[in-house]
Length: 265
Length: 234
Image (cartoon, rainbow over all chains, first blue to last red):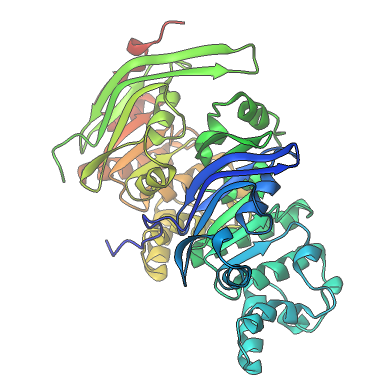
């Protein structure tokens, strides 16, 4: 047998500890802790209002937690609590090393500039200045997310929802991030479009060896994408484990309810 | 190859607790002990509902046992599947522990050939070599070539079953769990699967299987294992 590709290295890429967020007296999430390895896909599941998105926002540097730490293995500073970095350092690290795919493409795209410019922008933000190279890279990525490259100059509003979502995916991967956050990435799409996007995401994640934290309320999406799951209820993590184990032999009453509520087709 | 057992099941117990059905508890087995050596195929015996599949899934890490250990020989050491981290279990599954279920979990849009190649690609085998071996195996299993570029979602039960088998036999997994791999196959295809199993055993794989077909069972079993002898008290 050939050398085994090191898909999962031992050192954590991200290490979250005691993460808590209060909105005044209302709990967002409480005492969340986990490690994420390079190439690992973590699914966060739970119903609306369970704290999934609050948690994702706290981890991804969008929402300052009330307490706790989010340590990321940054290229420039090593394993560092991202909330201890200066604002400019943190923003730079987010631009260079992370991606964030929103549920609604409008939240992740700039609707006034072309699809191609949306995809190329992260490169420009990181200092790329060679127009020809950027355009080529953009074309490559449009192709990779299965979009018609002749439409590179069309505005996002002229693309369908599924296509907009693929533009957003390209925009968030073009700069070679190591960690990508996804908030219900297939949430607003038709099922056939959803299947295509999921398959694409699955393939990209595997080929690029990305670490991903994906929030979803859809158990089928969780099963297809995630290596392991974290189940949230009322702001707290009630169960964690290997994806198929959590879905096929759920231990917590809430997870059992969640899994048994899925409609069979 | 090692002379140590490749699978050691120790004092395993499994009880399901259904919290949303008035806390119903369903005891399945307890104090279950089993060892499987290289080249051995242990066939789980007993009637439906006795816990054969539950045991199999507990060994694979798909079910969480209530007590006990499941040690799988992986990389020159035992990994206790019941206590390992998810990434360790996935690593053991990727390289050591294969599982043929009765049903193929279809991934939308992924063509059959690619599905069969996947276990090789994930283990660093080159694309062309993986493709050749997948083609070889699908031919051997007599899956019409016209099907290879289609996702198996619309295939018949027997065709999906063969895709499933191809996926699990394309690599030589040192430990293989077989949950009725021949359930929906005709006689000729069953014979091919029996041959694949016996070849893998001759090369030193350790297997645990469930076979309702007595001919298949007799053709592959090294010994039978009665799950009911460990029945847990209700």
